[in-house]
Length: 208
Image 1 (cartoon, helix red, strand yellow):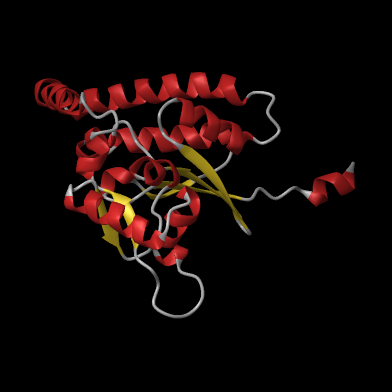
Image 2: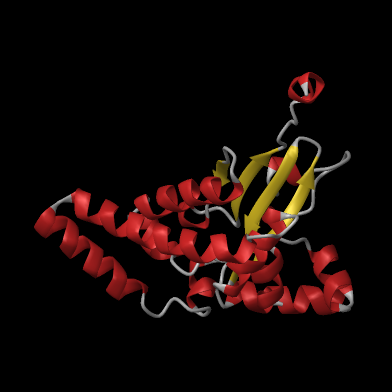
């Protein structure tokens, strides 16, 4: 159940039951145990997830403690190393490191999405392979790239330069302006990036 929330993002008890094929009683029992263990917590749903009338159901999200069970064993070392770099050489060295990491992601992702008809889906597949459990949600005005897991969340919480550099890379790869709406590093359940729909120039076509 915890992995289901990790891979699919904040979920209600009803959605979890449908996804896992468990009864309401079974879901509640598992949720109570995971909450008691500090792996999950219940939250009010994000405004964008509220549909219809009536009191919205609570969503269950992974806690920091829960995320630590999924590939965060080197976070403390990374934070300590970046703090040392910042103290010894200044913030510019941290920014340089963040940019270097982003450049590496850009190089690999560019190859992964090359020749793909749907770049956002291809990028999500690449990010999932890198441990981000990414998915794409279609919107009337564009798309949302959702990263349900962040291997560097704890590090990025202390050094937001990592998120900033990563957002710039997403924009370069997709060839359009993007807007980061939420990040796991800032306490949100999912890293969410809005990708506006690109308009085709009918004027240019008319002149040709």
